[in-house]
Image (cartoon, rainbow, N blue to C red):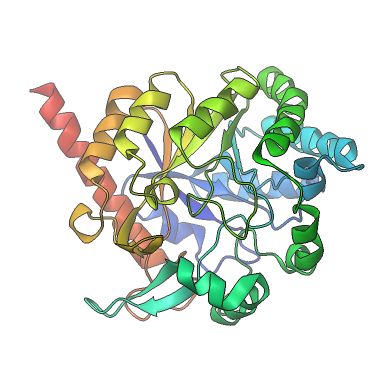
Amino acid sequence: MKMTFRWYGSAIDPIPLKYIKQIPGMTGIMGMLDKRAGVDWPEEEIRALTEEVSAAGLECEVIESVNVHEDIKLGGGRRDEYIANYISTVRTLAKYGVKVIIYNFMPVFDWLRTDLKRVIPEDGSNSLYFDEKDLGEMGPLEIVRRTAEDSQGFSLPGWEPERLSLLEETLRRYESVTPDDLRTNYKYFLDAVIPVCEEAGVRMACHPDDPAWPIFGLPRIAHSQSDFDKICALHDSPANTVCLCTGSLGSDPANDIPAMIRHFGSKDRIGALHVRNVKHLGYRHFREAAHVSEYGDLDMYDIMKAIYDTCPDSYIRPDHGRMIWDEQGRPGYGLYDRALGAVYLRGVWEGIERSEKK
């Protein structure tokens, strides 16, 4: 297992690499550059990122958020141009040692919450919440306005201003798009990109829909085991893999997360994992919880045991933490709770290792 930490780069991330390095068991980061969808990432910026991480004694073998342009998802007239840029970025990332690219194929919203800083009554920390009934009351534009106000000035993944400025127009473009249409366009993308990944030694890892169901009538095709079986079959290759996010998929109680890990891990179709916990509060109503099993509804021991048994060499990172100890920063991406989560997961892993060696 390689324990990693999401990092946005020194230009915009308030957390220094030296703090990440000090977390016990931390081997590297899952990095990103603040680039809009469709652009070819500049080589000099990729080089600078990887060299800075290496100088801190960490690895940069996983990159997140090489975003897929909406024209690719919609089969628009400029999709070949954007796919060419994507392929160029894949080649450059591979040149600097990147082995996994995490991305998603979610229409419009990369993820959605209805509240970014609601207080958890049991301990007074702040957490990300989702309550579907709020969607009907607020609608997409109000959700965007409200979350922007709650983000403390940080651009949130998938909520970049350039993308959201076109929100109404983009939603209209999806009105006639079915899930099968989206899968057809997805296959077109994978058929172009995966052969390049095979050549370059890179694995694409698709992140699930978050939350794990359709929203605002948009077609969403990545929130169940069956969905990901279909995605893997679109272009059958070891380079076409899943980023198994336990919190995204776990937002739907119908998803058996340990079973899904065993299913895809045994097929060598897990490129990376985001491991976090969620607390179910009702129908399509949940909050991010502390990683420790008893504070949420996901069993972290069973999850880590499934990883240990089927894909033990995977890249893992603690995901969406609470904001604790009065920390200020990007909602869901504070240092303290994610650091606690990483150490907790390492402890669970050590316990599994020791029990297996007896």
